Image (cartoon, rainbow, N blue to C red; front, side, top):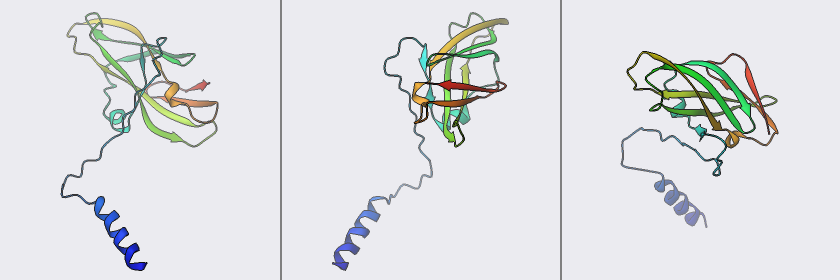
Amino acid sequence: MKKLLFILLVSLGSLNCSNNDSTEVRDLTLKTCDGDQECDDCVTISKQRYEQAITNNYELNEVKLNGDCLEITFSASGCSGSSWETDLIDMGAIAESFPVQRFVRLSLTDEELCEAWITKTVSFNISPLQVEQDRLYLNFDGWEGQILYKY
């Protein structure tokens, strides 16, 4: 019996071994909204993308909740803002408090080379951020104060 257990443990241990010397850590990215059409897009949950997000090329004007949609009004330089790509990214970490807290930031890809100052509002479905409690605080990077999300 001990011999069988030893062989089983060695076999399971060898399944985790790899000849690849890469130390790259894979990041789990989750983006799902159950087909919600009320918001423009859906929140992305990814620690790696949160850390790499471009956040210094816009100015936040307003952040507010409208049901499960987080509406963000921001301004940036550009021609029309029509080619801007925005993403709301959650860090993937939950601060254990009551209510719990999550950390989000807006990422803007802006390749427009004009000097006009454009203001735009985008909305993101944040229902994938819900936890067992019926509320949580959002700590929005660059926004003063917390946003209480009740669901």
